[in-house]
Image 1 (tube, rainbow, N blue to C red):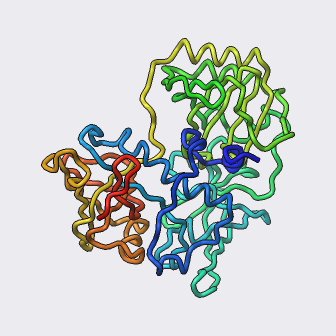
Image 2: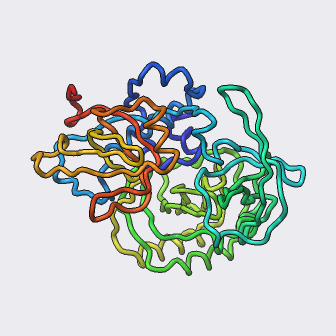
Image 3: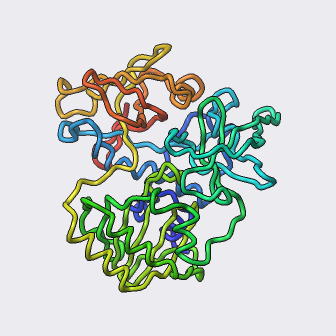
Length: 392
């Protein structure tokens, strides 16, 4: 299996980064390595993806990319954190509800408007890998609006609820089953897309209205499952790639492919689902999208801020990007709040120190005062000018 096919099958990777994934792995501090997660060869590719993201590190961020001469290259290493530094979703990766096992789908909590009726309660379990102590909690369970509880549920406590997916379920036999079981009519939108010829991108676009596309797909209920492979082969095929983000489905920037030869393929459900909806339906969707859209900028997979860590406080850190700029006086000092445990643990346990070149991932927007409230990850890297590493 080719590497890009492997990544497609696994799911969860922005296709922009698949073909150029295998490039670099950062060196890390020795004490970090002692509790790294076991990494299989295929998972190593996923880690390397984060380094590839750096090629567009400033794209879509609230910063001006033209002011930079250098960037910081690094890869986020998968790490097993101590129990007290883990989020609810990380602690309790599986729950048992109605005698069925469910696994965490996405580590981000869902908002209340996604939650439907209360279904009851479930037992959540997790293990502290540092002590091997087992923990259990009773979670409240909600139906997700439009979604069958035999597929997905929302479970959690303390006001934080996460999407869990039933383990071991088979792929629905028809496209109509998928549409109904996951409530795609209300839980999936078709807005941002790329025109593709094989693995070549021919431009990115934004739809003004996706109602017609959903109307066409509603009529494809008899579309049959194509299960000869778990990977949608994109070579020698013309298709549209829609960015698929759905809070209700626990999906973040996954993909939906609509191909000229009549296929609907997606990794929305943790692994590839491919259905033949017919060339006529697919052709109508592709034609409508091309004729009812405007050119759009690329959507970065993750928002980042990079620079030199200059101060660590109890509630925030300061990052100065002056060293990256063509002119240092154009630099900006960002105040990164560390109230989220996911960013705080990087500072308190991850071995990051003042003077390190770092990359910070965040959600939301940067304020006019250059404050970042939605930071959730930080890791070290190396200052790079093109392909040349600059000694720090």
